[in-house]
Length: 350
Picture 1 (cartoon, rainbow, N blue to C red):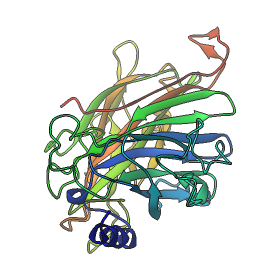
Picture 2 (cartoon, rainbow, N blue to C red):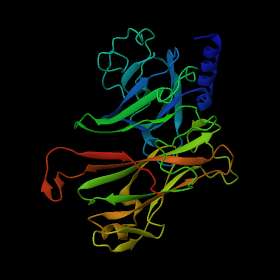
Picture 3 (cartoon, rainbow, N blue to C red):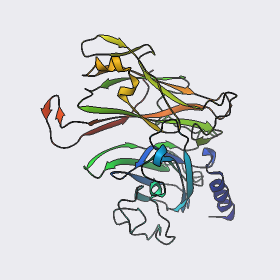
Picture 4 (spheres, rainbow, N blue to C red):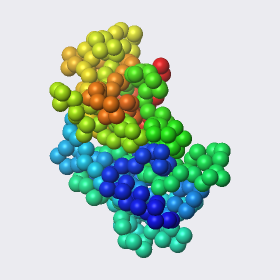
């Protein structure tokens, strides 16, 4: 790596972000660490040039603010060793791999001699518990000039598993990717809820019986500030001081939900998220409506960006993940052993 690239990397660390025109990037829109849950990620480096470092950027809420959907995020970032053709499986919470800097599965540290620097990859463990946030991993250079085709468009790839090690339950997703092909705009379409240019997102969602199943929506607003992906809420620059963020609600803002016999109920309650957050499905309904829908039903989940009105500092989209897991030891009234988790990235259908 030449001096110019090293200087560029140092400047980007100081800035806490990195322009997508300078790098391939992957986005893990939801990571968590607590006394019972950690996040395990795969980072796959298929860069065509000698990329021997990757830039890790974590935006997070922790401790008392971890579950506050309105709180701003904090940030930490630095470089970590990597190499062409490498995969690193990392326990971000540091529960596993305690003697190998959070890197798992007998990674030999030869071609990518990550052990030499002694720097931990367990990024979430640097924050207080509990912690929730989102992680970006970026390379320092664009594709090799001779690179073309699918390989050139996938220089970094990632996967995440949110792992409850107290029960063995887990769920996961594929990281969002951006490869600098579109210049100064971060392309989050692989994980974004809204379709490009739609101005809002709408997805049909089923809601299971509330007593048996917990349904949550994990929301990460996306702010593209001149190609640099930044957290919402840290950009409250409009005259009223209102934070930018992302709002979700059921129905059309008045009607909220259909029950399981085609009857429709009003009582929608919008919820706003700054930077990253989790919204429990019952909080999207008024108490009176919730009491009439014990068996759940279906609705549209609407999403709308709430911005500052300042160019380059507005939320432009969001990543939304729907998670269902069993609250009771029953399913449809029948006793079942163990724990189930079902999660997927929601995509707007319009």
